[in-house]
Image (cartoon, protein in one colour):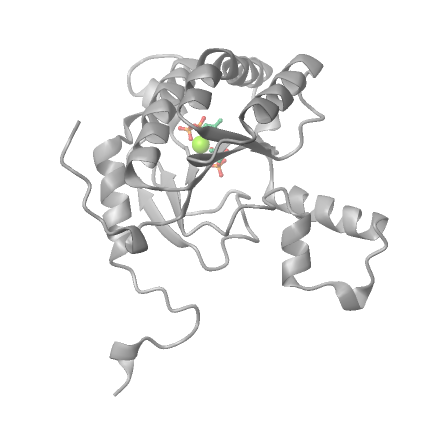
Length: 243
Ligand code: IPE
Ligand code: IPE
Ligand code: MG
């Protein structure tokens, strides 16, 4: 374990969201197949979940598979499904013991019935845990989420006058989680890639060239320290900027 984490709770982000990118390049740089990178990424996820609990983060959202990732070669897609299934099989008990509440954001329908069932069982098992909410974005797309929300609002007979920001929040996959305070993207790309496009309206971003499997506790702590120094103005003016 590294240095003691020293950020006051009021400066710690309540909700951190992570675009876990760079597994493929991490593997290629080591002469390994891409799936080895995804496996290493999964190992790292375990460390970052622990660190989140340690640092006092209450909501962690991780981008594991996007609606666009179906366009990858079939062997990689199959491998990613397999890894997701293994993670549930191998980690669920420990996550449950650590007080982690699992939630899923995205569409489960497209997954195999077996995987679909496993995800639902994991959600049910951990539903009363309160230490950390872990939202797993798997087959998630921000645009798809908005389509899903609009469809359900129309099905429920919501009138035009009733539509407002709060109501839309209620219809998103992320209902029950506050907007992310901090979004981390590993591997250096400067784009959202369809992640939380509605919820990130006022999120702070931390982008690092580090590939996801190498994004460790120390770098996570650095991201949180950087966040603690940000001035979140939400379109207003902070006191020190008045003449
Ligand atoms: C992120 O790593 C994991 C997923 C998208 C599933 P990538 O697989 O995108 O890795 P790079 O970006 O090709 O290095
Ligand atoms: C975003 O990474 C999706 C996940 C991390 C799951 P991608 O690697 O799919 O994004 P692009 O293709 O670089 O935009
Ligand atoms: Mg990528």
